[in-house]
Length: 178
Image (cartoon, rainbow, N blue to C red):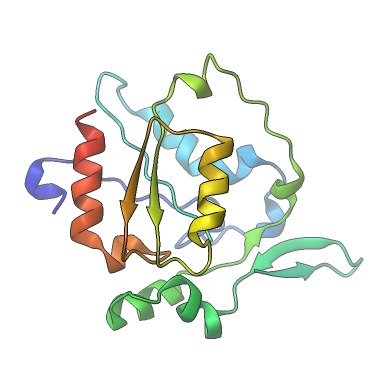
């Protein structure tokens, strides 16, 4: 769908996510975690419009010293929470891409400035059928960091790019035109 309207897409996984097989234990900072994204952003021509679409996703893993090193997703129950409305074939594919996430970055304090972070237009898409982050939690997230506009996917689950593809596409086109 995106190609049909001349959107150039690049699908990136953060370090240790999706197809990126970096060990979560090798990621010590948010900068390490975001390196695939920051490397890509450094390579593009900023005269072009770039729209970043973020997505996230918990069991803790510990090293031999008892220190938490990563967060795991129980793939047995993940489908119930993450992919409730996702078509079966996409659900199978998505489960193969669930990896451990680095734990150490959760303790890092990010220092955001209005000059940089505040200059980016942010939007939020609420997914009402998301059982991983229910609508009340999503509201807390966007209330603490107000976006320029909010959109709603009434039937969207946690993986709305699978479960509500045409509607999400419509929202992304609307955002691109803002």
